[in-house]
Length: 524
Image (cartoon, rainbow, N blue to C red):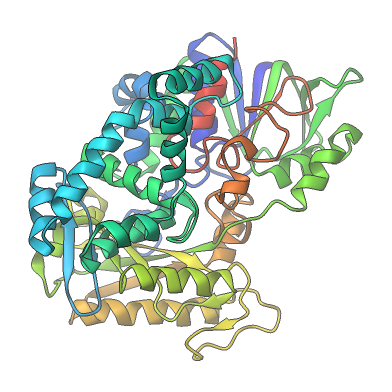
């Protein structure tokens, strides 16, 4: 018996468990895998002594979140430390041209103006406008949408701005990244700097409201950089586990929840594990997972969930993700040495290149030139590798969930469309060839390479359907009021005292722990 039983152990589940435990509630976290963390996992994936963040690595959203404001001091007392790079991000194009974004706005403005007269001033105006709108904007992005507080917030904003001005604000916020960048910035290199970042929100540069998200990310990177957990992301999990246990909570791994127990009154009273064990919940059950898992598996025998089960059949998952990890004999020797100091570097031809790769992946094709997000954590956290050596963290955010072909015509697609080891490694070779253009001696420095295809990621975490790390497509029809399903309010479900959190729910994916925080603060 526990007060709250939590199925799943990703960042949202851990935030909810920690906050509820601090309130004096007895919480029990159940994780089907041998380790907790969801998309947070650190392993010696290549060579002993080299610590890789297998999936998520950058915690800028967590540092800026209300969850961190509430839990940060307690987590730091239990060993959590961050490493902060001076240069959060940059872009490198095939011709070697590159542009960096630092944490000093004045320096950024100067650099952008040097590219094209007026671009720096436009950037300053855009960031100032976002800062002025930040209280309202971040309340919309991260608050409880179905609440009196939100209704009063929108009413007050309508009164303050006037209906037409508020309508204009929303209209501008719905614009795509392309429609923000091309009319307002002359430099293609500046376009290339920010366009790839919308991929990390589960969108593409042509997607509705992706322009607003690009501005938010630029604002966040300037404010908090691109921090990583010292020693590996595993250490934030250790801190959460200590915090939860210190307040009387319990965490069990290898505990696969197969069913939510619903009594005759339509109330959740506990869960059943795959082993047959029944665990009762006095106050409620919290599920951190996709709607397909919740309604198609855990509530499969409850007839009251049939409308939701029908909706999940139309729930759309986004593009797949692929990860590549390298252990190196030494830090990469870039043709432009300053690139070695960048936390997250995108390699892309630019805005059109990102758009093309997204389109190819969405049509089931392996992109000719994928957008590469390259992390260099040992540049500012040397504890992750032996002295003098290095690791690289690569994410390919445009990978087809099911392969229909290769846009380059070089890799044969499997007849069943499924990722295979041969396809995965051949595609990784394409990515490695791009690295070698900018790091001439790269292959001679490689000790080992470890790749994870979208299928590999789903095998590690059932919620990453087709390798989608964002809990479902983040398009406007499946976001905000309509996430995860039309008709749901906040994190409630049709079952009383059964709550739904995670990347598939508002406020969506990322490491901010938003849904876990919103639910835990709302529960008594």
